Image 1: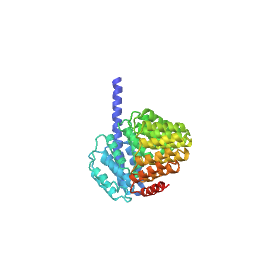
Image 2: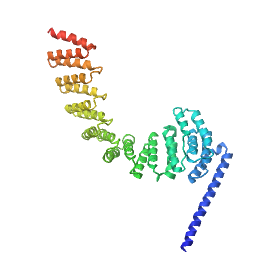
Image 3: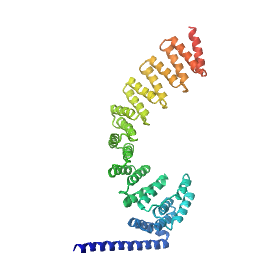
Image 4: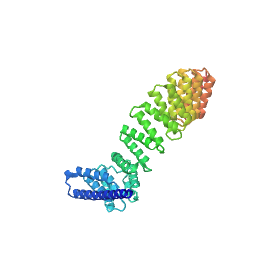
Length: 419
């Protein structure tokens, strides 16, 4: 009885397989006949039939001809990008097929002659790669390489097509493949490029759920947090994403950025300046080389100034000068310090020290001579220290002899010596 059951199963499988092959063969013959006799009114319907065939028989031995048919129809319909990807599939997905040279010829024609010049910037590189293609006998690997190629072209007109192609790949080959996380990440990026923010966010969430061990998870969490914060106005979700990234992937290249945006969320969305300052300072302490470090210290200073904490704000500005002396804001930070000493704290001696430090630290700066001259003026006008003023005017003459401030300093020395 057991053997009879097994025999029945084997016969059923064989009959089903044979039946499927017969149906596939007949379906393909139908498509060929329909393609050969089609009129312009039949194109849309025939495209639907071909796509149904590809969905039903993704591994068909006839797919080189089927993809080529699609390429031809889209080309005649001036849908050049859809035409292009189908010709590329002829090259990538079916080894040693009869349509390869025809597909290459048509691809070259589209890339060279496209009426909107969409391929102008990448034409040479694109065409050179056609001769380097190596088809893999594993169609899943070949499909991944095909996706990687069209994604690498960075053509906006291809984005929606690639999103659909990725969906097809994931459905038929992808979720068990080693490259599935990468493909899903590409899809998320493309949704971003198309400003489909909800779809992008959901795709990143899907990546995190399906492939928690992927090396792409830190970037997926970061990108998702940025979308939640900047595009779909979900600050609490963004906060959770950034905290998750900092907590679980502190060594990733995205953690520092997340730390900055966490500070910004506390400052601008949650209206919690104390937490904002703490997070900005933590960024500088933990990720001192991060691109947002100087901006974080500026934000700290701004928050402290709003709270009339002038000495602490000055300390934050000085951190910029000490830690990032070559940053373009460092010189502006020194001027902010000078203004605070004069206008808020009326500490003219500290203002002078700041100006003299500027002239020494940034001697080649276009305003260095002017600021040293200003220091001499403050000595005389605000600190009533004539000798210190004269000494500083001499310093202007010695260190910046070609500047107009050197000539003015000489006049000032003569004037003060006559008093």
